[in-house]
Image (cartoon, rainbow, N blue to C red; front, top):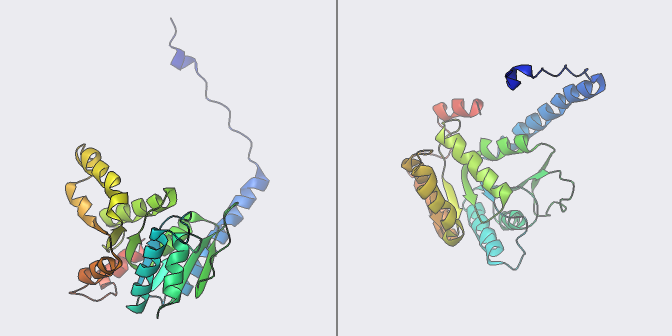
Length: 242
């Protein structure tokens, strides 16, 4: 009997859609423009903290109030606060920072059904591409503060954990706020990822879990106690390759 695999034939190459190819090529320049604008407009915001959380959290929710309090204290402590610029916890972060002493920054993303950007932004940037926006969250951040959220929040958390773990960015505090929300995920990390050897147990130390806004601020200052907030020369080289 003939081998069915050997009987398979490679499909012919599709003809090139030149109009589509042209559009894709020009898209590169739009992507470049997003990076250039982001680098230039955010170059002077250090030190800054990127704050993440659900866009669906209502204004009267305890998570919203906690995010607002964290952002206000960070702003008064001299940190610019960066959020995704949308509603929910992103709005709470911008609102808290806007009321404080430092800049409130929104990195807004254009989505088909997204609500309007929140009004609490001293500096507002708009992105079409998630990947360009994600680089801006990391590039200038002295810390990440992650409140309860959904897929987008988990995506940002996984991104910074991967970059720090692999040495593609400098080691910064990654603060998870609300221990009861994160417990299930962290238990799974230990019981599955560490147990199966897909991460090292030491990788869990990349994250600090807190419940109070004061503890989030303290964790950041504790990390930088024996050094300044500015990247070292070695860290600057790493960030250039981000």
